[in-house]
Image 1 (spheres, one colour):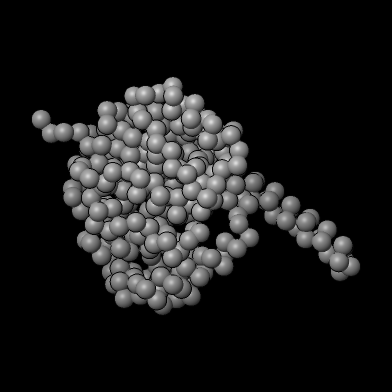
Image 2: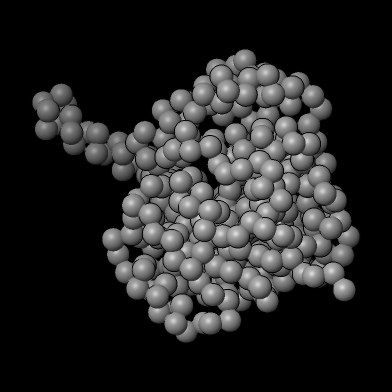
Length: 324
């Protein structure tokens, strides 16, 4: 009998005391024998650590390991989790942020089935979003050189994206977190995320290039989860330096991987969406499409409200400074 693969759940946590108990409980529902949970407490100043401690005492079946970092932000906290977790043998790292509630009791079975069906050349997979490079990605000055977006019906409603329904997988060059899946064998072959791109921005893109150099394919797979746009904060209230960081990192990636990026973007990138054999049936596509549309409406509303707030703050500062 073939031994079942192990699963590491790596959860990056930054001041989410109002949500983290639900996040952890949802992960515990997904866990099976051999699963491990790594709670990365990234500079938390709230009660998040106390909540993790309480759940650790309550649930001994799936051990929870704390990893504490000094507010290093997403990319470095993911690497801290990957280093703390064993990457030996056959298994998968499920990496999620603290605003994701997994909701798929059969997650481990579905992931193992996906990789068994796709074969050993399947590497990095997102459960949320993916894209291909634009044809001129290597030489353009576009800070986000993506096209052919595909988004899980559990996502936020990205404009122009194809909607991925239950039971389906979409091959794409760049998986975009979170949540994502990286097999142990990929970490052993490719390594960690590039910390030169910290605090964040295009770490997914850079990792996708390195996985492609190893002959691995990537894509997006539908797994049930919840992640309301208001829970994360960065989508509607991004870090003020975000745009500059993204542009800086894209320029750095072009310098580091320009030839490889040109090779990938100049070749025919996959656009196909396929049904995964053995995936459970019974999900209502029409309901999921409506859920995705509702999420898009909420995202647009949040962005509009955030834009109005920024405009009011700017007007207020201009009055204080005597410019308005």
